Length: 609
Image (cartoon, rainbow, N blue to C red; front, side, top):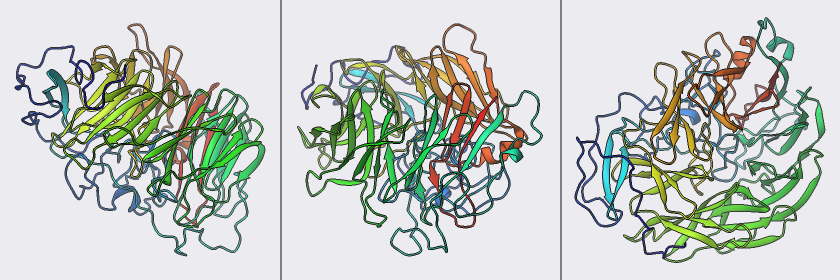
C-alpha cells in the first residue's frame, strides 16, 4: 500500500523485537523521526575501523572526507605483503580491495573517466583495510523513539568516519587521453600489448604443493591512460569468462583461457555494466562516446556473452538542464533495464532497447537518487533537500510501468546508504547528526520487518556510496537469502568472522571464524544451502575458497580450493577485485587500472584443480 508522501509508514520506523538494555532507558517520545536528545554515546573507537584508513581523515563525522589520502595518494610499496597506508578490503593488498568502496566487481564511475587508482603497490595481509563506507567505531547500543515507536540504533563511534572522495588525476595531456607512447596496439588480453614483461603461468604454478589448486590461466590488462580506467564487472558462464577493461570487452574460454571471440572496442572508456546477465546471456554496458575529459557515460550497448555479437544500442536522452550522465548505474529486473543517473532514471526493454518509461521528480520535491535491481526494482529518492523537511524515500517500482507499489518515508535525519539485499530488502542507514547507524529489513509491503539488534557489533562489507549518484547496490562481501543476511565483521588481530543475522528479529543466528588465523574473509554468494566465501592470502599461503552450510547447527568450513602459495604474491596485489566461483573454478580480476606505463597490469586469474 502506497503511503502518502507526508505520512510515516504504518508502525513507524520499526519496533525492536527485544527489550532495551537496562543501562539505556527509553527517552521521551520526540516528534516523528527526530530525537529530542542524542542517543547515549559509547567510548571512542579503539583504533581504526574495519577498512578505515590508517591515516586520520581531515574532518570528523560519519561523512568526513579525507583530503586526497590513501589509495589515491600513496606511492608504490614493494613486496607481496607491504602495507599501504590506506589499503582496502578489496584494494591492491587483498581479496576485495576497492578504491572508493566499490561494488563486488561493479564499481560505478563517480564522474567522467572514473576514479584514478593508485600506483601499483604491494599486498597486505588484510584485504579489508581502507574502506570506511560501512565501517563503524565502537558499537554502543542506543534506543530512539521515532513516531511513537522505539527505533534501535547503534553508535558510529566518536571518530565519525566518512567515505573518502576519489579524485581523478589529470592526464599528462590534460584531455583525459592516454599518455602518448611509441606504439599502443590493441591488447587482446594475452600479453601482446604495451608494457613490461608478462607473467608466465608456469611460474605461478612453480613449487605447487599437493592439494593446492593450480592457476589455469592468466591475462594481462590493456594499456590504460595515465589517469586510470575502469574495468568493472565479471561474467562467467559455463563456456566463457567475460571482462571489460578500459575501452574493450574480452572473452576467454573458461578451461584454457584462449580468446572465445574477438575483443569489442568502444570509442571511449567503459563506465559501468549490468551486474548480472539476462536469462538469455546478454549484458548491457555504458561507455563514453569519446576519450574527451568532458565525455559523459551516455552510450549503451547490449552484448551477447557467448558469441560476442552486439545487440541494440542507444544514447541516453537528457530530461532537463540538470540531468547528467557523468555517472550512471545499470540494473536489470526481469526484462527491464534501469539506467539511473543524476536526479532521474530511464527504463528500457533489456531485450530490444525500447524505452519504457522515465522516473523523474515527484511529490514534495523528491528526486531519484539511486536504484537497485534483481528480482525487485527499488528506487531511492531525496526529498525537500533545501528545507527542514528533508528526508529520503524508498519505493518499490513496477518494472513494466514505473508505478510505485509502495513508498516508505524514511524518518527525518536518517539517510539510506546501501541496500545489502533487494529481496528481501535489507537497508543500511546512518544518522549523521546523532552519529548512529541501523540495518533495517522491510516487508513486501514496505513496512518494517526488523532492525538490527542494538547490541550488534560493527560490520564491514565494502561499498561504494557514489558522489554524483548514490550507488546503493554496490556492497561486496555480503550475501543474503530469504531469512538471513551474512556480514563480515571488522578485522581483529589479522582475522575476522562472518555473522548470520536473522532478518525476522535482527539478532545474530550464528557466526563462523575465518579458517586462517592471519587472514580475513568475506561472502561471495549463496549457492543453494551453502554460503561461498573467499579468504585472502596470507604470509606464505595462497587464498582459499570455502563454503559454510547455512542450515543446521554445524557451520564448519569446507575447503573448496586452496590457492597455490606460489601465486600468492600476485593474488594479493589484485586491485579492487571482482571475483566469482563457478563450476569448481575461481576467478579474480581487477576492476580499476592505474595506467602506469612502466608495468603490465594484471587483468584476471583463473584457478582450478
